[in-house]
Image 1: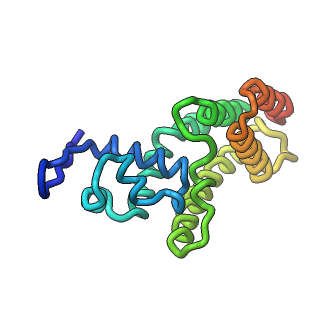
Image 2 (image 1 turned 180 degrees about the horizontal axis):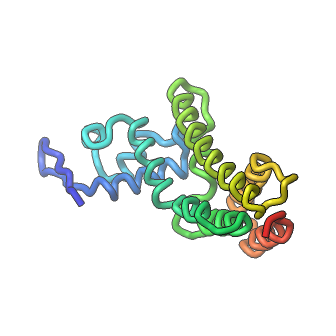
Length: 202
């Protein structure tokens, strides 16, 4: 990976942009966009404010890069889920992937997008718009997958793809809230099993 060097007074400081971005992601995920101060971000990243601006742009640009990293590394199970051969397997991969993220010991709890979409300033409105646009794109992909499932006879004709996609997303969001509240993994796994047992597809 490329190493960035900060030139200035005293000893130059070198840092790995990928590692610094990973550290910023953890701060944004834990604190949200509004709650993450530049001081907290630069301390976690191990860089100065001038280095942050030079490498990543402003705080908003850094957050967008952190969202890209979050989607690439933490939500990669979503792409795999959409490739599953049946709608039930799509649901299972999404539910189990979400549970794995919510219950691992290294990452903050909750959905980064939900945490960061709360706020009231003009900057946070831009962030909310970005998050909502990404979520809408993900929702469309899931709806289209369930539309294909219904066309293939994998889902019954009376099942509305948009409704069942919304249902599945709601279950996943509820799991995230419960995981953040400390609900035992066994209960969340039971929720997944119950959801799959009630699934209308094969």
